[in-house]
Amino acid sequence: MGWDLYLQIDTGGPTLADIENASWNYTYNTTPMLKAAGIDLHNFEGRACKEVIPDLKAGLDNLKSNPIKYTKMNPPNGWGSYDGLIKVLENMLITFKKHPKAIVGAWF
Image 1 (tube, helix red, strand yellow):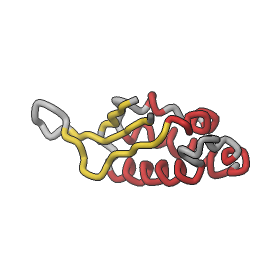
Image 2 (cartoon, one colour):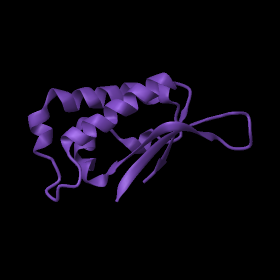
Image 3 (cartoon, helix red, strand yellow):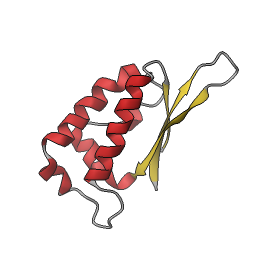
Image 4 (cartoon, one colour):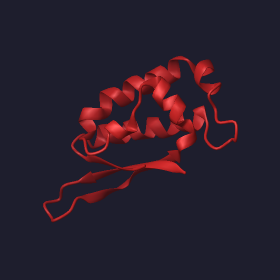
């Protein structure tokens, strides 16, 4: 089981269109790390990227500032890791900055 975030943009049509190559999926097993770092992905849903960038950046900085604390939270079953989560969040931040007006969609 995992979470999925993706970006959508208003093209003027009846529905929002997905932005190509702007989606992320990762395991729920890293939720304790996210919460401890102050990242609540549920709060991202339905908001513009520019609105959530500060929270994402602060949480990512928190994760990176204390790798020992967070690697201890690696899931014991091996599904997900601190290093994997960092890569996903870094990619997400880069893409959010490229598309500040895009809307964050989610599947939890």
